[in-house]
Image (cartoon, rainbow, N blue to C red; front, side, top):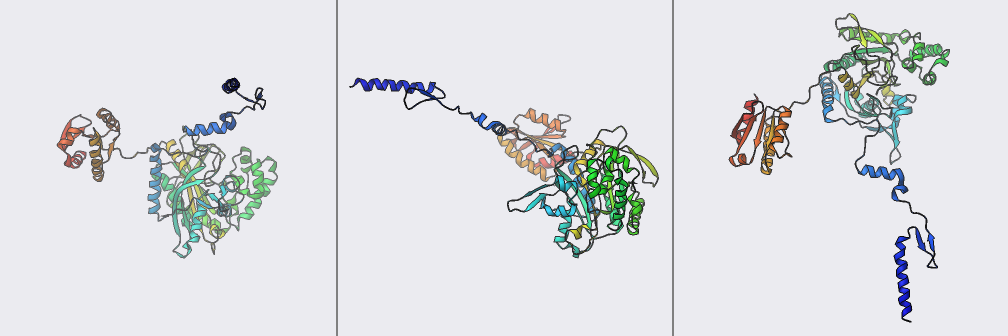
Length: 521
């Protein structure tokens, strides 16, 4: 009886030992016959590409979303320059800075910009938040500024109220050179005055910003009339195009019934040819619009601002009336490489100009001159008058207004293409080198003393070797290097090294700032 349990135990041991070797099998209820199991997929195969991507992301493989852009430190000198000029001239011209939220009600832009515009139908980042409200990332800022003007009762203040802004806008457009889905604009708005001098002042301000940036530009200007005279022109334009409808591009066929003015700046070559003989809106202006436009041009002539009368210029947004304008960069004939793809609108509905053209413009002496306009450029920005927008957005009465906006990324592209010299930030005067942990601590305190003394100082406290620090100081082109080592700590001294001659001098530590100031004079 004792042998049987021993024998049985041996058999059981063998079975257990065999189990790990029979992959994909288990023993059935009879104990001897293996039963095939379903193959268990590996984790990678089970989750597929999503798992592989998640593993890759853990390794740091995140990248920018399409249409977004990082602005690296070496690019900041361009951004700083544009911001400085905008803020400086904005203050001189009497504009106060306003900041509106990036997130607004979607209905604000639907009502302001127009249901049939590309911005509303194709490009807005609109969504419902957790509370069920329909909101969007602002595609432009004019509607937000007018909303703020109404909401804060600025109609009761002295008029006009003049604002400038700078910040990011968002449109889910096709990314390309000079156009991102998150882009930055600066803009100026004057709300509460309908005088033609306001239109002229905005154009002059835009032109002077470009001039301050040493950019070569020209003003394109037109009048698109008002609600009184524009319907007659629309009818004449539609009548002209009806017989040519079959030759229009698909977009223009849709625009013919909704917004025929947009056909004027279509970039399709066949559409452009048909528009050559189209009626011009200036021939349909009422007396008020015609007089307003003439006064704007007279102001520009008085200030010697070069401009080109462009009968095809219209706005991409529905709220514009009377004066509309854009500023285009000018280039030499040798610089014909494109800034971006043709046939698109810029961030504020600004159109491009596709065909080569030599514009007759007024120079600063009032003489007519020919200037070469780069055919492939995207306009830097544009604007115009929008007298009815405040009332559309809830103002108790019609409030005249005008403004413009400029794409900063596009402006920087032009600055680079026109090879405008941009000086970077002021380089360091001295380099602070140290040897040892105690020297690093003292150097931190000395750095603050030098900063308070308005001495621009470079350092690399993470470095330990003197040779590498001196090499870095040499690359930075500093005049002097201050050196603190263990001996200097004990003696309460510091070494001042002339980087050009290599001559070194030991001075009292407490007099280091004054000694450096003397040498930098």
